[in-house]
Image (tube, rainbow, N blue to C red; front, side, top):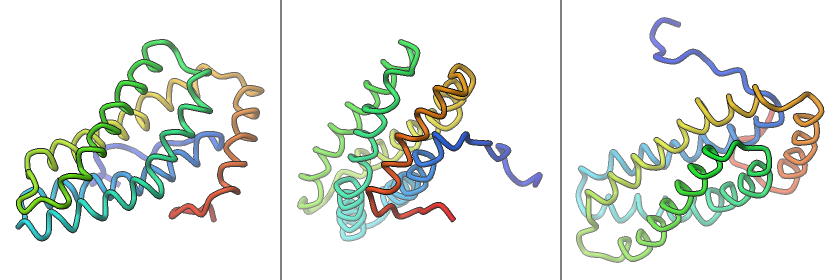
Length: 161
C-alpha cells in the first residue's frame, strides 16, 4: 500500500456513479498527455479516440453532474465546476478540428489532457468530499435515487459489480 501516493477514497454510493465515470476520463487524459509527444498519426488517432469518448460518455457525464449536483454545491465549487466544464467543452470542440490536421498541435493535446486530469482529480479529492461532508443522510439518499436512474439508463463502460 505504500506505493500509492493517495489512499483509496471512500465514496458515498450517491456519488459512486460519477466516480466510476471518472476512470474513463482519466484514461483519455493519460492517452492525450502521452500522445502529445508522439508522431502525428498517433496524435490524430488519440484525438479521434478522445472525441469518441467525449461524445459517448464524457459530455453526458458533465450534463449529469450539472443537472444533479449543482443544487447541492457551495457557490465556489459550483463556479469552479461550471468554469472547468466550459473550458473542457471548448477544448473538445477545438479537438474536432485537430483530428483532421496534418500535424495536430501537441501542446494543445497536452493541455487538454492535463486540464481533464486536473478537473477529475479536483472533483474526486475536493468536490465529492465537500458534498459527502455537507449533505444530510436524507439528501444523500435523495441524490442516490437520482444517480441510480442514471446508472440504469446508460451503458456505462465501468459498471457496478
